[in-house]
Length: 207
Image (cartoon, rainbow, N blue to C red; front, side):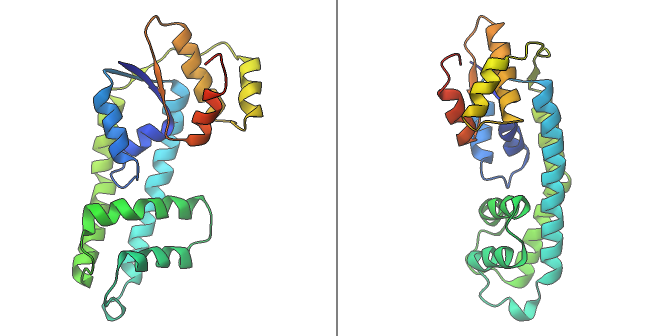
């Protein structure tokens, strides 16, 4: 089986505290050949560095701000409330909020952790964000196949995508996958975890 993957599939595989990590691992195991374009690869590099920077800073700041005296009966909901209170509504906060459940499940896994245990959980997560994430990135990049650069612009298809609220960079990723699919004689699944992107693709007959 063959697939062309969207950026969020790659990112989810690299970060164990990404909420879609397990789904991405399943994709990695299911498909014999997984493809991405140079555009997707470059975007993945940018998203990876931004995501890692945001998460590392968040967990470092969290460890500094938490104190033993006000940690009694600290729960997951307290952690979530802390993020909502201290971070403005934006992409950064969404990035942090989405990581909380997998962080708690992977590193805490207790309903009422004590202070020392919780700080160690943060440190373990930070260690993985400084090392494990890079080994997962290496594993992904050395098993994914790169497509040839797309030359055709597919102006009409781009307009259709844009009319369905699928804009850059999603439209270019979709067109990369479409272009590659046209040049191959095997079936190719397009894999994305973005519902808007999927909905746009599914409404266009040419895809």
